Amino acid sequence: MMRINWQKIVVPLAAIVVLLLAWEWLVWFKGWPTFKMAAPSDIWPAFLRFQPLFWEYGWQTLWRTVAGLGLAVVFGTLIGMVMGLSRTMNDALYPLLVGFNAIPKATVVPVVALMFIGQHDFNTILIAFLISFFPIAVSVAIGLSTLEPEYRDILRSLGASRFTVFWKIALPKTLPEFFGALKVAVTLAFIGTNLVEIIAPHGRGLGHLFQSAQINSDFPLMFAVLIALAALGILLYYIVVALERIFAGWADRAPG
Image 1 (tube, rainbow, N blue to C red):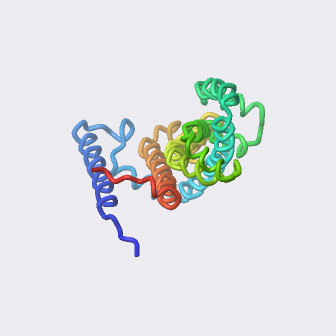
Image 2 (cartoon, rainbow, N blue to C red; image 1 turned 90 degrees about the horizontal axis):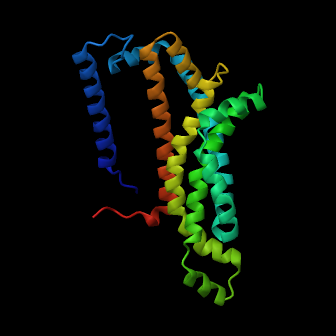
Image 3 (cartoon, rainbow, N blue to C red; image 1 turned 180 degrees about the vertical axis):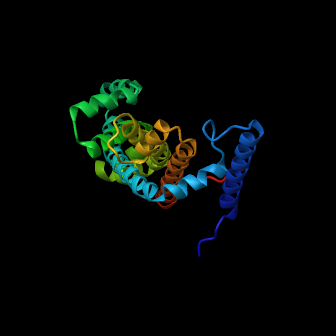
């Protein structure tokens, strides 16, 4: 039976409560009105007032983010494998990936929107993919390229095929790096999704709801959207953590 580590539940919740209380006190102490800064006590009524939109738009944002992240996992892993198993391909692809990743994705969104006019879902998923696949590709490439040659040589001397070497040694070794990069990619995918929803709005998604609140100077609704995005990001993050414990739990080292 799995034991529940209450410290990992209570401590983050306590940190959130402290943050909300400090935020509430700061707004009260400064005397900021709601059209200048919203307090946590102003945000919950905004959630209730627009609850149907939060459910609908939250789902729209979530499934596009997950789709883009899924593509990033598939293609990032494949590109990372090619780079990690071939020094020539690593030398050829790494500068291209670094250069592309250095381009601000906010400048890419209008280009994509013009290239694929009307393909709103495709555009959103594409940007989420483009902004999140880089850390996955790099982590897999580094994990494979730093594989200890003695392990590979021992298996090859015993008659193991290249696939067996990859499956038994290389793949398990890259899992800790892969999941570490996936935790970063989760947040990046949300950034990509919301960039499209805000810069190239199409009436769907939490980014569109945020833009509508911004136009109307509705600070409680704006912060409610931000908190909804944070909640979705935390949800996906801990799903990745659960998968990491299942597939790479052996690499976990408790702090001394």
